[in-house]
Image (cartoon, rainbow over all chains, first blue to last red; front, side):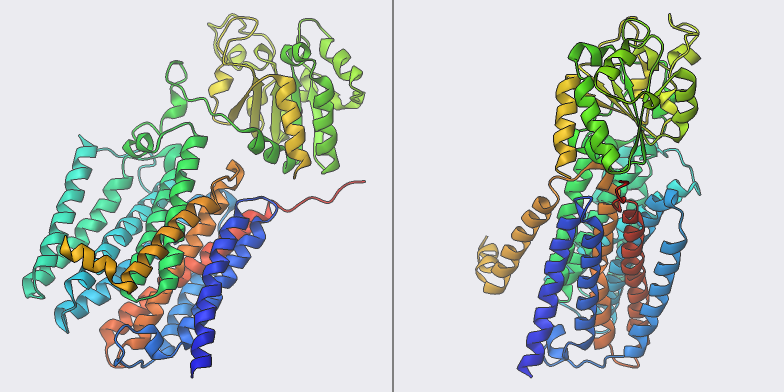
Length: 476
Length: 107
């Protein structure tokens, strides 16, 4: 039945193409949903192909037989399908990261289970070649780290265990020794036959990999968790790829490696977005307590946002509030600002302006400038109205304002501007601060807002940056 | 050293090496530029794809003898775990991406 085999092969090929194309579509907001569905279809096609493929296509050993046991397969699929669907439907939007983490861990666990099945056969039924054994042990190692690591990440995000970081003395050295020890046990297993001692040692190897997964994630916490989940996700991909080698499946190999590579890049991108290096994240230790160190200013993290990201954030929000300041006046950016406003309004975004009484250098400065750019008057909110609207605002864009949005005026009695009424922009869901540099404003004082967790800096000249935003939004 | 030469010269292995390298490059390139707002959905989507490991579990069950309950138990566990990853992963990603639906224009 050459034609049937042909269709099976084509099905796997199309599945792999759907994965690649799906990932591609997933990286742009407009097409992301289609990308996810496409990848899902690829998976369904491949699963069907794996179910109906003739035995000699899926088995490495040509004389081996398939018994199908479809009852077992469908039983497992029903259990997993229902569990996945129900939990994915029920989970709250805020709990998404831990949900992804747990799903990822289950993928890793699947690789562990498959590797253990092969190992039990190896030790109790029939020995496999040492290269095959090596592949199986590698799948077990990567899958095991991913499994327990993801489970700990889930537990941390869910608040089930220490939501802070957990560090042993010299934790990094402990981790290295643990990994080295695990690898050594693995190598010893390779040189040993399928003896009873080998079997025991294999169990030790399995336990060590599972412990390493926990120990690997233990010191990492707080805002760094998504990065770790992304990294663990790429490990699950790798373990799937290695398992693909065990079962001689190019499809699994391609799918797994694709996730491994994409996950690695994504991990790096996520680190970049937080202004951290991956090594810094992995060594961990201060991911959890970043917000508490308000007093020290030297080592605080300032997050940057690219023009592209800012444009997307604005475009897909429901309400945007501009906070113009002296910087806008200096750059003569009011007309471009209005252009951004018009583009956003066209997409159904509600745009307002928060006018602080002393924004700019004189009272009313901003009103004049904005009137000049034909901004309708009802869009301008005064201090009181703006402050009551801010908690319901999706994105605040600060254009060249500084002291009028300084939280120190409210909570730092030592600050020279303590007591000055300010725009409470930190109560909004997101803040984008456009500024030429990190230099303090007119009052010459540092602004803790720039280090606030919801604030992102967009450095550059106000007019220049706003023009770039216009271009980006027009391209969407 | 000789074994490495032999390994690479074997056509089947060479094919795997090609596949490996091109897939890695493809994986890097395909998401080289992605906006921050999509990081979490993309991670979740990639996670769903890593559920391909279920294919291995299906093969394991299909080749097991009907009275080999140890292998079958491993297999059904593997299929259930993999399936949870696949179904849950794609569903969760879809829910996240629902938020990116384009709004209708007002005028």
